[in-house]
Length: 208
Image (cartoon, rainbow, N blue to C red):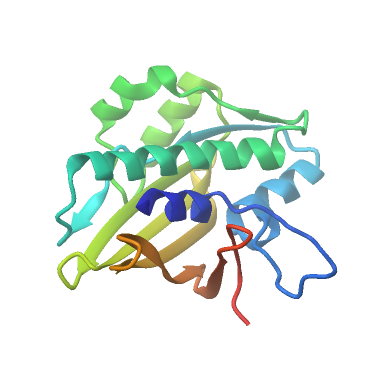
């Protein structure tokens, strides 16, 4: 399934084993999680609100609405799960519930490029959050839907100052396999650095 690769790509997990020459992606390899870890180690109290995209920007793709919705739903879940897994045991970290924010966000008509300082301040006041992760995602297809590119962009924003503290950009390219009747990994990038997919461990690692 397409969303499996995107889910794994969003949910970077660390793996350490001296007998394995590959270095698998972990929190220290992303700008946002690296910044959060640094702040938490400094004793900063983080109330984090994650705003995942409600829609995908789609170019030249002719998939069913169900596939698009599945990709969006799975990638959104993985964002919050990633932060909880990596930082949830720290008493200074809390993930803010965004359940009741829907109508407010619709009113603001938040665009993929970001928020105004006024919108950021309003969200912070409503939720008690002091940090915000704002993400966007896009899909583009080529070759009669046989090659698919998923691009993700996430920003960590300090709400009071309305400043961007870290940015992560990911790109995942999948190609359709006639033998498997499904999409398979071709190439991936995290912040411009090439990664491979390890099928046996179902994880991403840095390319040699």
